[in-house]
Image 1: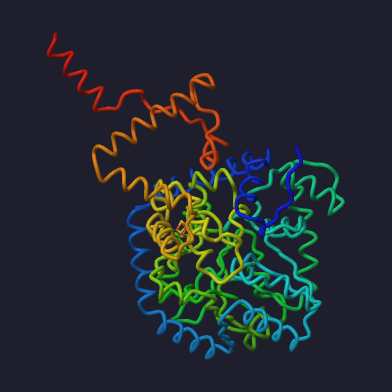
Image 2 (image 1 turned 180 degrees about the vertical axis):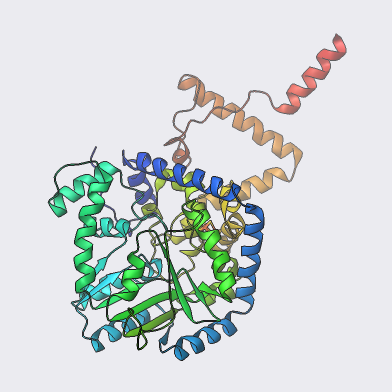
Length: 478
Ligand code: SF4
């Protein structure tokens, strides 16, 4: 079956339908998400996982309380180290600042380490429009750049592709002979990327956390591309959301522990690259220029609207891996850079263009698995419910849903009405079921959305109260 091309701006229902109709997507998703989830559980079991989560939460709460002071301290230290801090209100300003730095340094090619912040502002697009070539150097990002697709997971951008898909892509784009050997594919990609590093003028990365007391940008990778991005080109630019602060080096290592164990189930990642400034006289390596772009892009509004808890997210992806909705539809169906439960919370709150943002808080069963997996104990189900309530207040809920809730409230206010509604439901659903052989296959519109992909067993013919009364009567008789 041919799969529909990925269109992040299609209506939400179309995006979900395309995902559900993709025959390979669930295979790819379940292979990766189940593996990542079980690795996380094992890694947290090896330490006092609850204590680590409590400590990380406390630290992130402290960061939010002291955010302005920490940002100021960070800027002072980066400047003292010889770097430059730039402040960006929105995505357009981030791109403007990076382009200005690139133009001043006569940059033709940019190598990039994996960065959700630059995905959020569509930096690659801005660079290409300005005639500058961006090259993704994280293997997963490199693969989706070859495929011309956006990432579908915070940590594993290529989680929606099977090995077979990647093999076909490498044959088509890199002239590679057919193989399913991941090591061979990696070594071909590594060879190509090595040349890109050697010829790039500028490196751009995100930032996993930034240490206020030292003015240090930290990036966590397993491939070493973060280190090469930040040290080989003449100019290095780190782009980060303003919530990425941690107060001290000790706090940085606390977050590092929580991040690596929760994202990939590792005790620690292969590389942790820390940059505090440009190369100094006598240094063996390092960039001539070091810039940090700190962006707001809707984050201060989130704080003001009581959604600050979502800013404690350390982007580990654990909530995506355990979410039963994400496991079915994958990341592209969310239509945003950020997917899964955390994406369903922050995407409608960020100023980026998302089609049907009001539907995202409903892309959840509210089962709570995300909250239980989150290393910062973010109460994602509560945030999703708050967002749903906000949309209802703004009149964004569908008319049918509104009327159904009103009807439900009316029925629940009186026992007679409640019992009458139950009888009507039982009679109607049993009639429909008898017409279609025992179970309701198709409900009439507007309820047909339910039966498009689920059964609808008819209501019990007798209510619980009726059955209970009959049982008591029978006992008395006996
Ligand atoms: S919300 Fe929690 S689990 Fe989800 S990505 Fe953020 S830190 Fe990880």
